[in-house]
Amino acid sequence: MIALDDIDRGLLRAMALDAEQSAGALGRKFGLSQPATWRRIRRLEEAGILAGRKLELDREALGFGVTVFLGVKLATKGRVSLEDFERAVTAIPEVQTVEHVLGLYDYRLRIVARDLPDFERILRRRIMTLPGAGAVEANVLLSEERLPGPL
Amino acid sequence: MLDDLDRRILRRLQADPGMPMAALADAVGSTATVCSRRLARLRDQGIVRGTRARIDWAALGYAVEVSLRITLDKTNPRAFDDFIEAARQVPQVIEIQTFLGRVDVRLSVIARDMGDYQKVYRERILHLPHIADIEALMHVARIKADEVLPV
Image (cartoon, rainbow over all chains, first blue to last red; front, side, top):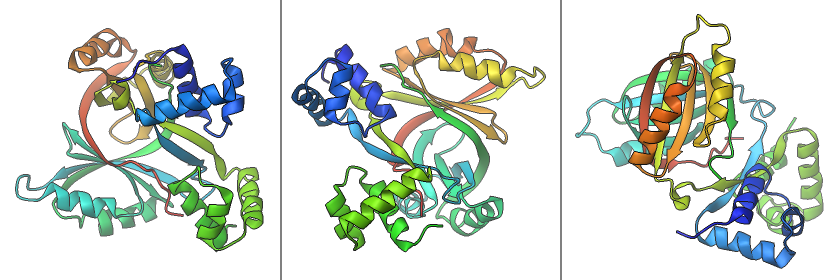
């Protein structure tokens, strides 16, 4: 693991909010030259800390009015293959994230849908038919915020 | 409304937000001029909000991630506001979501190891106001994380 100084942490915080700033513009905020900023960014990328970029879209403007988090329990643990479930669930376009968790549920899914009837369709036709899918619990997302974290 | 070209642009950019305009134009079968104009319009319309860098907390030494599903004491009308305001002050909280369902609020909490997690949980989380119940899901693996919208 590489050591970070305050400037590295500042760069990470700034890029987590807006990754479209040029190395020159970013550098000016921290009193760095453009090449020096560029080298720091490269180093953070090579260490795997800066793990890519994400395009932020307005879900509702694109017609996705509903985001639901689904806790899924596998029905017959041990007999169904986790790989089969994971492969099938990952292939569903409306499923945005799949996390394998320990606790009340085995998997946590983030699903986008146009509206609640559309969500019901996805749930019935795509989720409940997954190999090994058992009990599910749905929670409709009302708001979310991402925080800078311990930087 | 979006046409096919807009959708192709959004699909490509979701996969690779840093894509140079010429490569994007090639990929969607158009010209760089048309693509920049389309992209500018998608930004003006607020559909494209920007780009954020993803930070890999595990690469920064935060090996533990826990999803805390919290039920609040709703007899207090300020339960949500007070709780969220206080949760924002905990540096290890990287995400706050509110829900309609069995769970009221979910926090994503990261920690360096289980000892560190126990410390954050006891010293910070359990002191947050208006908690009626907490359930923890321990994060094992991220199977799909791109959060791509099926446009």
